[in-house]
Length: 187
Ligand code: AMP
Image (cartoon, rainbow, N blue to C red; front, side, top):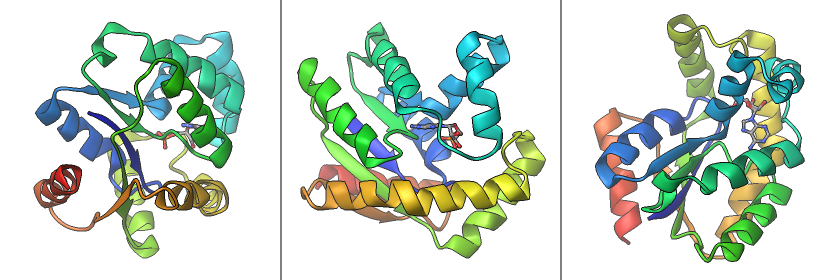
């Protein structure tokens, strides 16, 4: 199963991807986690990315594509993957198509987690308390939501236009949301 999980910041993509990874036995590829690992390791790429991430902007498409290609080359991806946090704009969606075509592994499904915007802000505030992410401060959160509307929402239309999109209600208990995603994947 090769799956893209889409949704605004705070929609629960990361949490659901972690559950699906366990239950479907596929790799969870979070581009945010990959970037945070680069920042934590103090690599050149991490240094370049940190300020951009802290401000809530998107790191360059070139950096992301390089990271993604190398991650897709790792052994644990052979059984399938969940992409969480990629693609973030239409250029990345086209790049993903090209990469997957090159390795002969097209997507099986794209799932959009729908969560109303007032709930997103509340959830991110909760996460900020638990995890202390540098980009969970109010200004950066506002920016990330704006970037989502301007650049990532068109990706939803991109997949909807091809008929590969399933929309799932992302509000409710974690297990219920996961069951909705699993049901959508069987359709
Ligand atoms: P996330 O954990 O997915 O919310 O990502 C945290 C931050 O990492 C984002 O706000 C961006 O700055 C950066 N990032 C993650 N994925 C991407 C991507 N696909 N393209 C550009 N920047 C990204």
